[in-house]
Image 1 (cartoon, helix red, strand yellow):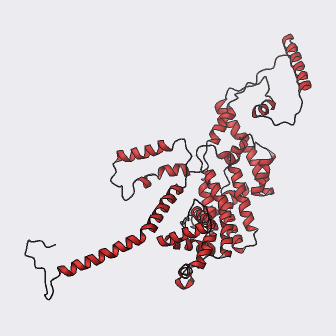
Image 2 (cartoon, helix red, strand yellow):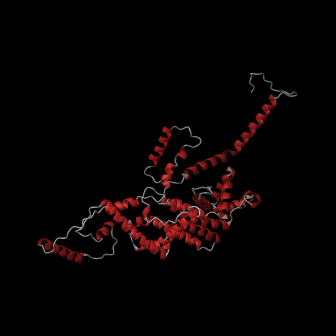
Image 3 (tube, helix red, strand yellow):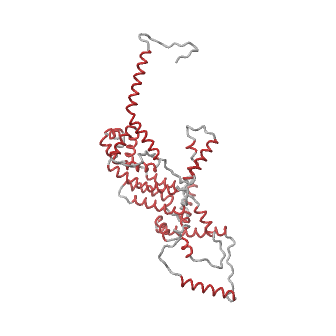
Length: 452
C-alpha cells in the first residue's frame, strides 16, 4: 500500500513546478517585511489602523514544500489591506521589490485575486493531507472517497479558463493517473510485460511494470456499513476510472472480496460444515416444520415498514438471517475487518517517530549521552500520548513572543541608539588621552614576555 500523503505531495508538487508570478510577489513582500524590525513595527501599526484583527502573523514559506506555500498565502491574504497601504505609504517597499532591483515586483490587486484562488485550491490538499495522516482512528475505510475528491479537484482546474490552471491541472492529472486513476486490464499488463522483456533482451534496461491500484482500498470501504457494495460505492468507482473502466474495477472488487472472505473462512472457520437436515417425515421434524411455519406467518403479519431512521442495532437485526441448520463462525468477517481496517494509508506518523532524533540531536546538543537521548524521546512520547499529532508549530506562542520583542524594541529604540553613541564618544576620548603625542611609540616585547 503506497503512502497516501506521499502521493498527494507528488501530485501537488508536479502542479506547482511553474510557480505563478503572483505567488513569487507575495513571497518577496513577506520577506521584505521580515527583514527589518522597523518594518515589522510599521506593518503592525498599519494593521491596527486598518483594523485587521488576526492572531496569525505573516509566515514565510519553504519554496520546496507546497503546504508551507499554502500557509504563507493564507496568512498574507488576511493582511491584503495592509500591503496595499504599504505601497502608498512606503516608497522603499515598491523600489526594493521592483525589477530594477532584480525583484519580482510588489503584489497588486490582480496578484491578490490569483493568490486567493491558489490558496483555495491548495487548502483542499492541505486538509486532505491532515486527514490521511491521522494515526488515532481508522482511515482506510474512507480512502477511496479521498481519491475521488482529488480527482474532482484536478478536473475542475483542467476545465478552467485560466491557462496556468489548465497546465497545472494536466500535470497533476498525469501524476494522479500514474498511481490512482488508471486501471490496466490483464491483456494490457501482459502486453506491457512482453514489451519489457523485449527491451531487456535488447539491452535497454528493465522498465517498471504498470500496476493497478491496490483493491484493499475498496475492500476497506465495503467493510464500512455506510458503504458496503452499494450504488454509492459503485458510482464513486465509475467517477474515478470512467464508466467503461469502472465496470472492470467494480467486478474486480467483488471478486477480490469473495476470494478474500473465502480465504479467511478457511483460516478462522475450517470446521464449518453444513449439518444434515432432519427427515421431515419424522414426528419431531414435522413438529419443527410446523413451528417454523407458524412463527414465520406471525412474523409476516407483525412486520411493517416505517420511515423513521433506524439505529445500527435495528439495521443489523433487520438483515436476513443465516440458515439455521448451517454451523458458521460469526467472527470471520470480524477477523477480515480487523486486518484490513488496521492498514494505515499514510506513513507520516511512523516517519515522524523515526525522524525525531534530528530534532533532539542538533548541532548544539551533540554531546547528549545515549541514556539522556532515550529519556528525552520517551518523555516526549508519553506527554503526547492520547492527543492528536499536531504537524503545525505553536504559532500563537511565537506570535506573542514576537509582539513583545517588537513593542520592547519600539519603546527603547531611541534610548539604545543614544547609549551606543555615548559609549563610542567616551571610548574615542579615552583612546586619545592614552596615546602619547609627538612620538612613534611601538610595543617591544622581550622573548618569553607577553604583551596585551
